[in-house]
Image 1 (cartoon, helix red, strand yellow):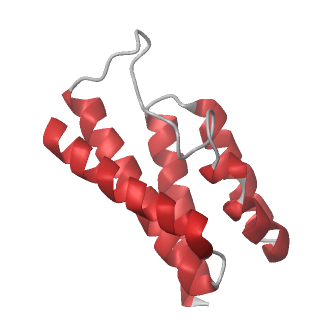
Image 2 (image 1 turned 135 degrees about the vertical axis):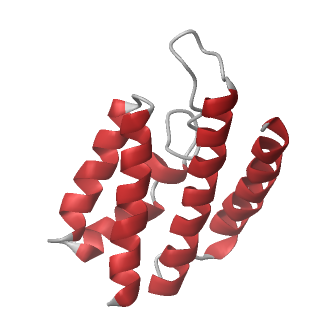
Image 3 (image 1 turned 90 degrees about the vertical axis):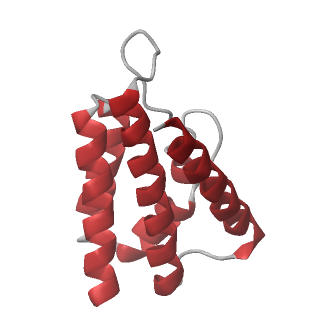
Length: 123
């Protein structure tokens, strides 16, 4: 039960961050998953493991936060760092709930760790 609440908290934090930086399409995905989590945990687990979150181009994993001109200033570098850390936290909670595992998610964890290191260097 505590992990379920933490999952909801992490998803909400990601959604809030995405709305703050005006990434509304991605924020809406989170909003839908949060609503679904309250009614259909099995479907939510499947979506959390899917390509919308961890796939290639256009996925939440692939998103880089920029301004409208495609630039990244100091504040957006910090937002990118926070975003990557939240994705790491999401994977941790998913693993505790049994939603994450296998080599694919291991690779994503490794890549996120590299991303965090990169964004730390940009601040």
